[in-house]
Length: 305
Image (tube, rainbow, N blue to C red; front, side, top):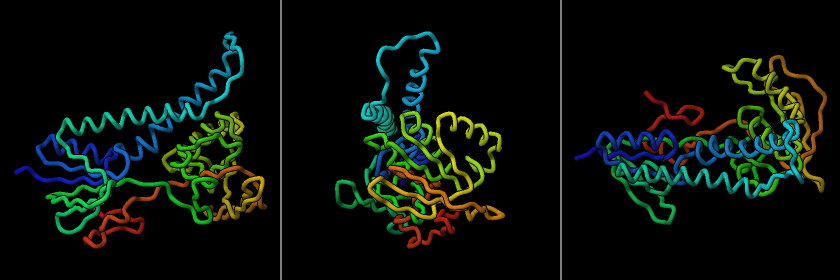
């Protein structure tokens, strides 16, 4: 009898594990509540690079005169068409993954899985009802979601996550990006190219404050963002936020994360919307892990051996 394996999560980790297990002769159930392909395909690398390609095309088109090419009329982004192209790219790749699963005999079950007992996964199906999957092995590959920031509670309209930014229906006149990491800087550059007035706020002393990245990379990125007329405030955090008839009013104070602590007078920033991009949080809640005796660390990550 083939080994029964259930994989919870059909992102890059989960679906590749499922395919390899099927190739080795296992009977595989792949459980996914959202779209197959996970964050990378639906809310990360693929959609952002598709938007970036549209933004870069617009930037290059505006420079055609430098190459002796005359363009009649004005150029402007059509956000609905840009988003439709992004959705088409994502949808095509998701369809390819589903066909890959079919080719390997993998059962794709659309719903939210949790551990319901020894060797048992209960799936709350997207269409309603519950399906129990008896399993000899269970692989957790539930990925992550945008992290929240205290004081900047996401509402999907004025205060956005990176997921929300990929569903914008109009280009904001102005936007403040809180977090100068990889995702924040990428979205800042895309929105600036599309016509937004962009401000980036970073708590650390440089953009891309990642230990593995050389500080020269941060300096280069800062120069390029200034060329795009992106305003950058480092060593600052949002200490207050309020809303009035003109949009959002943000007060930037010194960052408490620096040693020694930063010292700077308060600074006011106005923006139509705020994009919170301060990293990722783990999707380990609601899986029944604690009840099943699975040990987690302080971040909610599963302790492995």
